[in-house]
Amino acid sequence: MRIIFMGTPDFAVPALRALHGAGHEVVAVYTQPPRPGGRRGKELTPSPAQHAAQALGLEVRHPSSLKGGEEQSSFAALGADVAVSAAYGLILPQAVLDAPRHGCINLHASLLPRWRGAAPIQRAVLAGDDETGITVMQMDAGLDTGAMLVAEATPIDGKTAGHLTQELAQIGARLIVEVLADLSAYPPVSQTDDGVTYAKKIDKAEALLDFTADAAKVERQLRAMAPAPGAFFILDGERFKVLAAEITGDAGAPGEVLDDSLTVACGSGAIRPTLVQRAGKPVMATADLLRGKPIAVGTRLNTGV
Image (cartoon, rainbow, N blue to C red; front, top):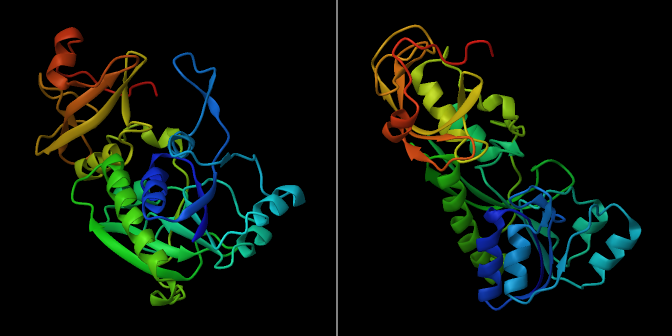
């Protein structure tokens, strides 16, 4: 097939490579424009999808919008059989959706209709869902409302959002190759209205650990935020990211440090961080952090927030 690929973050890269490796003709890769980044935060940094596309020798396009007639005509002129989207990041106007012969197909990281929207993996972890998955869907003008071609589930089982993103990206890459090998074998199935939930974009303010919640919820919060933006607590005005933790049965006032292993009391139970990170420093074991930054028993975290 002649394919237009549309994707931006690391999540999109396995699907792009899989489609190219399966022998399809990827006529162009659409991705978000380069953003400021680098060590100083000023250099324009291409997206992971752009890096992958260039390594494969593919044409890259990164318009800031697809609403203009000129961009839409340029898209249509590629004569694609299908467009495949994976976390592209731009809304596709109807003219773009209609341009490829078989329309536009999206890899969405949830089991639709649960968790339509921008942050399905993080919201599934936060909510305590038992499983998540990939849905391959025909795109329409709605927000992840299109008909489904195939879906595959995977257990969450204590995984971080970062781990699940990598796992789902691989599942999605395999599924899209299978679907495009024989589109007729995957008739579209309309989504039901039952069980619809919306996964709004993660606000950085949600990354502040809420020690008033029970320990299980706090532990889900840090897994949902790992590795980015990174759940954190505040001590002496400094942010400390927590990337992994254990749940314990200890008790105390919410936010109180209970022992010299940095066990922190929650609304019910407690958590013991195992991987932490100070600003500008590498991720380290909690014991290593405490050797350089002792935190006394009885200290209350997040005070004055």
